[in-house]
Image (cartoon, rainbow, N blue to C red; front, side):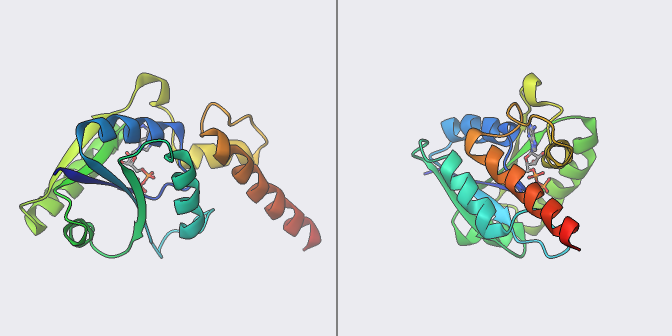
Amino acid sequence: MTRAIYPGSFDPVTLGHLDIIKRASKIVDELIVSVLRNNSKSPLFSVEKRVKMLEEVVKDIPNVKVMSFEGLLVDFAKSVDAQIIVRGLRAVTDFEYELQMSQTNMVLDHDIDTIFFTTSLEYAYLSSSTVKEAAYYGADISRFVPEPVIKQVYNKFNLKENRNEQD
Ligand code: ADP
């Protein structure tokens, strides 16, 4: 049984992430989308909310599960008995960091390998941070994030705006 994890922040999940999830789920028996609990970043959505949104978005793909994790990626991979780490490559700018990370993970645990998916052309420019920036300024994000996520992102910014107005 081939089990892979697809780790990331997913703050929020984008159509680019979903494309990687769909493609990766076809070549492994089980894919665990793994939301990193990272205290050093200040996220828009809580980890629990990000997990919920991902669950909603992958609900029709039977071999995809969603979990959260903290600590070392290779430790998490071991704990769920995964042999593969899935990552996406958008542009050259992703490459150096991803290469370094996969090599570090390889040194930490030689039994776990990283597989890279090159982004589909239509999503090459897409990142969670550009989605947040676009939504903040009221842009249409329906081409960037899955349907159930659109409203959640707008709600966040409305709330924030309301709060700012009250300050
Ligand atoms: P991280 O904070 O670990 O970079 P992200 O949620 O931003 O987490 O991304 C998780 C993974 O998905 C990374 O491997 C990233 O390169 C990949 N990814 C993000 N956006 C896209 C996209 N538009 N197309 C393909 N892969 C993507």
